Image (tube, rainbow, N blue to C red; front, side, top):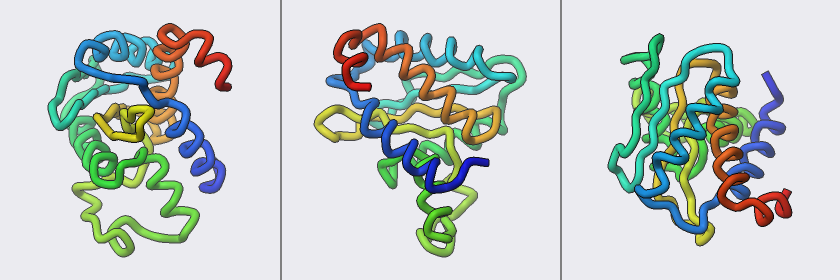
Length: 166
């Protein structure tokens, strides 16, 4: 596994970069399709969810995924919603600081996840408006599948602006 410091730096860069000028239910299907395409680059099935303002607006559970993935997605969603950061960032921060989600953050590990696979949908203004989740592989692969989908979406929708920011 990558060093916690490297994972933390990666998560911080990605959270800063993947911010939407606006994001509504009208954008969900297009992003969902990009996430599904990204998942095809990985070795196994991934369950996906998109939540906007507490409303589940997209779910995808391909063959080979199910209730176990739903449990993990619920935990990842709670973590992102409460702490307002990616679940990979939470995991990396805990690792860098030698901390534990239960002992140091006082969060029940059966309700919250300190692993990758949950990502905030954040506007450029900084407001958190939703959650993207992936579950099915390792936590870093779950996270990377989300980033792959965001990358597809941003390249197509923000073209020159996106290319110039890298």
